[in-house]
Amino acid sequence: MVTLSRLSARLLLIPLAALFVAACEHNDLGTGTTTTTVPPGLVPTLDRASTYGILAGSTVTCAGAPGTINADVGVSPGSTTTGFPPCVITGATNLANAAAANAQLDLTTAYDYLAARPCGTVVTPADLGGRTLAPGVYCVASSLGVTGTVTLNGPSNGVWIFQIGSTLTTGTSANIALSGGAQAKNVWWQVGSSATLGTGTTFRGNILALTSITLVDNATMLGRALARNGAVSLGTNNSITLP
Image (cartoon, rainbow, N blue to C red; front, top):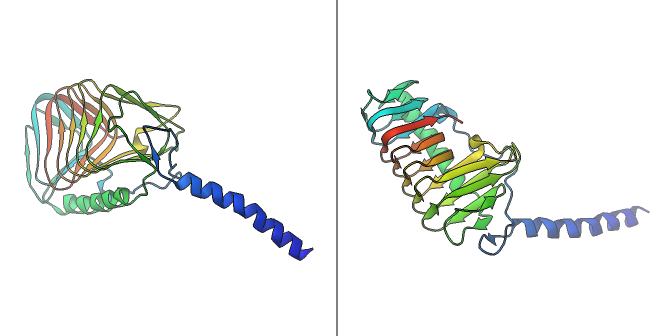
């Protein structure tokens, strides 16, 4: 009886293993909708960078009011902000101090974690506009665009990770929409160079960029603009609120 029980268990494990392998395979967004789901809780920890709506490596600029950052703002190793006031920071401002340096260290850890996640779905063509995406890890080797609306549909503990080899660019009035309970705090954009949010973009999620982040006029974020080495630049009538 012991031998039969062990044999039965092994036979049961074979189809389960096959299902696991199939779930981990890469898919092409242009030919299918299957993704590798990120287990709940398997997300980066921003730690000392978590209170920042903006974190930059060189400088933070705001072209003119109105413009509001409903969070902390930090710069390290740079030390300057321009346009505040008339633009408004509701939280703390940390410039080239220990707090900003520590936040940058934790940003780097989170960035590296995101970049190391196994890709679940290759985005082809490299524009998310008009699509509805389940939780998962999406990747593109070079640049990614968002034209129109992309809908992230999933439960409240669903996680979306976008790995972008080069630039992220959204078109005029682009919209990162959430449905089914999805939360902006669980959406992560790891950008290999720089991100630009076009005029009137409604953006949800956290941008972790190697170089710089730019918000053009009337672009709003429910998330964070975190740049490791370069500047974060705002136009007019921008707002950033923590998710």
